[in-house]
Image (tube, rainbow, N blue to C red; front, side, top):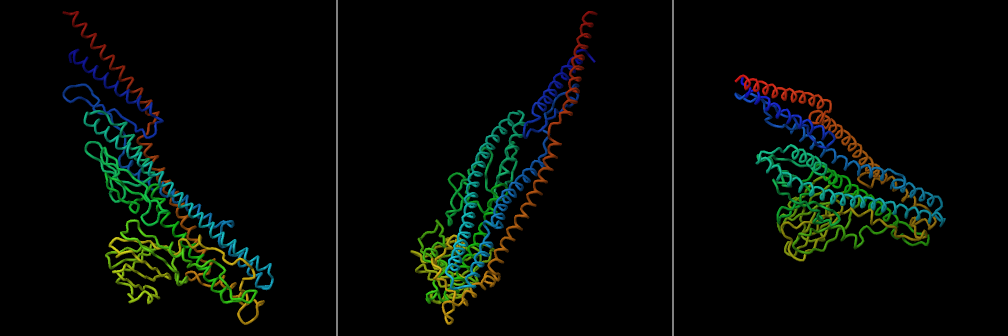
Length: 564
């Protein structure tokens, strides 16, 4: 081998080991950098030429594991958001200072005092005071549920802002990766940053990815809706629900097109918030509303059976559950409907009420579908009994419909709804019916004097307690879905407690899976200082040997020149 070849070998070795030392130095410098993936110099012998070269600087990343971590991050943050809200609700329902059941105990305890001495005005006033306390307990509970809804709206708005920011940054990095790939430059640090951003995005929302040949990655949410495609990022927007203005939904804007994607989204903080709102918050509001309405209605009916201290027939103890304004508030029309509508929902049988909202959608201008949202039960108009006049609608699953005038009367599940449109109903017209949603907030004490309590029956004189006994017996009557008032409250508390416990287990297990995969990733792609120190010595020694090889070739060359 000539001295020239020896010099070439030494020079190549020197350059290659210098590059390898630089890679080790980069690893050591980024040992504490979040998301950094360890790099390795790929040294290879030059075929048929002799010597060595650095063919590539590999990024020690595992795409499958990275994707799994993103999925685990999305699941964990979804479970965590759900659990935090469920814990708040569980504590709210169970605490003595906010429990409706505890307030009912006090209410019926005070009623027992009136039973024992019905002519004692002080006992009557104490009972009214406890009735007022029960009203405030229902109203305070509902206000807390409304505040949870407001909190969810705020968190959704914050999440959407973060998602948009991350999406814009991902589109920029895609552009940088595309350009670097085309020019043959290294993309390792860019890919690390992109993975870090996608992991952050997974904390807010679930998504899928599609890698492109030019190094870009496209990101899709929901049912394949584009969030980032190449170097372009779409925007998410928070919008009012088309029927319920108190609810914030999420829309995706692509160019000039905007579509509500709320029902499609899952995973991440957003998914957890939406799941809790639909499955727990609204169900609890409906349940507490139904309980308040059944309680008010049954107590009012019994109060009407008796005589007050002045010998008069009993007036309502609690506010009328079918007050005029209340009945109109129970129907929400979609903002997309073509015609204006007047509406009302009257409760006709509290015993058959369901703790649920309903959706009514016109399939054509002469047919419709009603869906009970709590369990998905549907009735098409051709499955209901059609009556020839609205006055004939007086039983479950009956309706009267005049398509020409835009008039619909419908009775299901203990309520009767009347819609009167300014014109014909059109295909796509939508209404949300909330028979019990506001029941707790509208629960109010109407009687303001203990003398007005109708504790006596109509034949035994004003000082007897027979009607008071009947009112007291209502505590154990099976009036709410086959259960007594407090038993039904207990069932709701048990349901929320079970949901909360499940959420806690889900959060803990998803966190354990995420931590395990993060630990695996760290062992595979993280920088190990001991390993890097060993490689530093290895490449340093190789560098020094390469320098001696060059020196040896110089000595041989000088000797050859001297011999000539």
